[in-house]
Image (cartoon, rainbow, N blue to C red; front, side, top):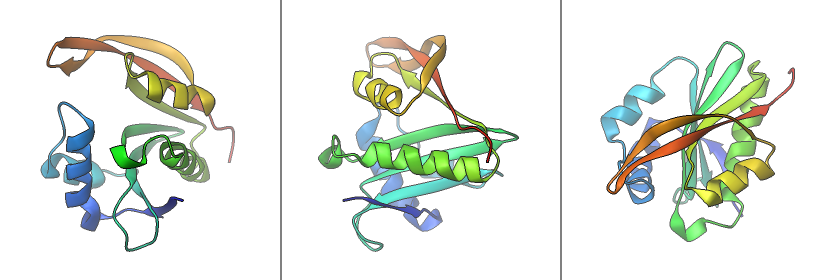
Length: 152
């Protein structure tokens, strides 16, 4: 079972590798370092134990009373086992503790598994970004989804 831990810059090499296995246009070490250095940004990692390999991660940023999931990835070997749900739930709780009243994200409209997860966790579609994600076969629209967190 996955436990969620605070992530750090020490995790970035492993996170870059996992991101590369999860997305067609992955981010590099520099991009993750810059994002992690931004005010209000926090990284959480899923592991079986504190020193074990990363099963998944979530990078979230809080600005005023809104939090945004910047990116999330789960190792293919652990998909469908609740790791993604645990990461999103933990990020939502952390964001709420820091005063966020909503959590937003963008997800490719052809990513049915992720959309199902987010809907199951209470997210609702709030909008659509046409041709948002670049893919080898063309561009794909994104759903903008939001979860109300309430007041801390």
